[in-house]
Length: 356
Ligand SMILES: Cc1cc2nc3c(=O)[nH]c(=O)nc-3n(C[C@H](O)[C@H](O)[C@H](O)COP(=O)(O)O)c2cc1C
Image (cartoon, rainbow, N blue to C red):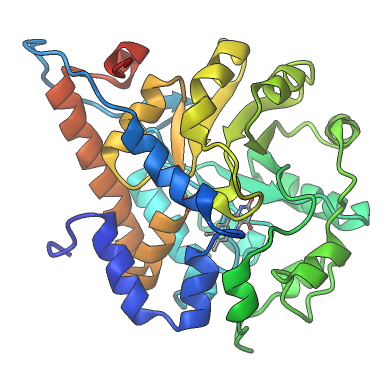
């Protein structure tokens, strides 16, 4: 594993390893992929202004997160169908999260049963959910999440319809027969076809999702709600009026939904301005270096999420790969902290970002 120097190495290796349909399913964004490109460009536009002679020692990256403490301000984003990438799929990712000590957000379209994941979890789990036209499968999923001890529901709000993903259109994802989706069928979701196609997604997902649905969730579950896919700080302001919403994932879905949007890095600071200390805020999209996490924290995020970075690592080396990816990012973050004069995550403030 020593030859893997950074997330880019995982990407390069996954690219040669994966069949083209799968590679493009993961790598691709929507339309011209401007937002996808902006996610990495936006972080490079932010420059770090380091301090010197700060007597920095005993650097620690641990942070509190709700009732827990995690090893670094770094979570694993929900991504569908991980068994397409590695035979252990979500269990490999989970195992890495267990060993690293962080939270793995399980996708509603997990290719491993939610119960099997919960049975192997040593860290709190969050379950991601899309809202369906037929709410009964949502209710069943919520009940399962509660029974299995999931600690939060992540409601994805940036996908009322499927993004126009042109790479998927030209290279449609092939589903091998050996992957079992009976846990999704059991919810009452027809899964005889790939839901990650425009037509199937359109049949399933409720395009009319609204704030009334966030209110509805409060009437059916006590689980804390985290909204995923918020970009406009005005929406964070509305979220503050919903007591069941405890966190916001500032995200453009890894550039896979609406093209030509801002990136989370562009607006993070404004979300913190609106939310104050009342909500946990997460930055999602384009994280591939410890310096990206540093900048996210400086702009006011409590933690950052990785999507593709964990998937490339999963494809290349399974659980050890994902652990290596997490550890690499943590080590890079520690390095940045040492070079900027920060001993603890709470030392990372807005002052470290240069204003031009
Ligand atoms: C292959 C793939 C599958 C994804 N599946 C889901 C999903 O099921 N639910 C969801 O809310 N987001 C999903 N996402 C979006 C991620 O949660 C995350 O927002 C995005 O990957 C972050 O950008 P990054 O890949 O640059 O880190 C998926 C992303 C990818 C690349």
